[in-house]
Length: 106
Ligand SMILES: [Zn+2]
Image 1 (cartoon, rainbow, N blue to C red):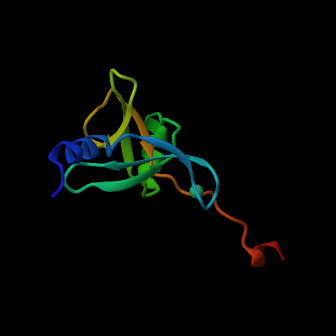
Image 2 (tube, rainbow, N blue to C red):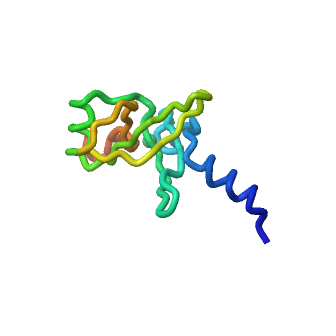
Image 3 (cartoon, rainbow, N blue to C red):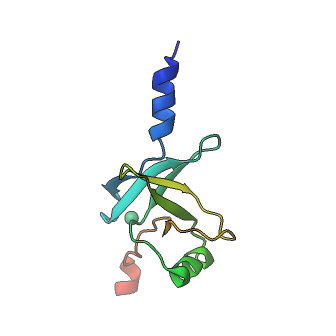
């Protein structure tokens, strides 16, 4: 049987943004499990986007997220509705920069 207190603490901290690096390209990223019911593992670029950057990210097929900083200084990643204005920072899914293709060099 799972201790409900521990389960609640795990659920409450799941969307905390944890800094790390992308294993493929080595760039810094933020990871979190956003959402409470249908949670999604998020790997996002840590640089906040302005409006133009968010539009370009969404046109590129990347999801955008709210980067919330709580009163205790804890950063959380939460779902972002593009039609609802937000006062939180906005970040986008991480995509690795394009890698050179062997045939393209020849
Ligand atoms: Zn990467």
